[in-house]
Image (cartoon, rainbow, N blue to C red; front, side, top):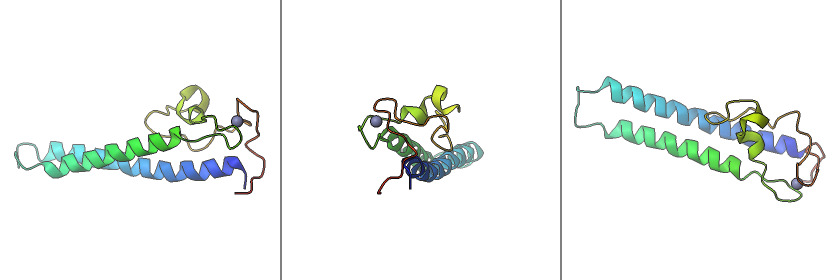
Length: 118
Ligand SMILES: [Zn+2]
């Protein structure tokens, strides 16, 4: 398995968590709006749902920030979070994969497509 494949598997998993988190936040907001003035005082559950969504979002973001080059250990999260590299509006939703036009680490030039032992 190559390092690119390793990262893409991780990203795929994080994207799934992120989508669920976004969904939870959306449901939380909808619930808040829908039950507004109906059950005025008792809305803790929608706040909890939104909170879980925010934590999930933050978890994914923090995980991506920790992606490092296997060779030199420099951070590679910017490839996924910076829109000019990932070619997506990265902030809200992660890109699907490591940018295909990036073939190696910018610092040590280790190729992402070399087979690893892991
Ligand atoms: Zn490197």
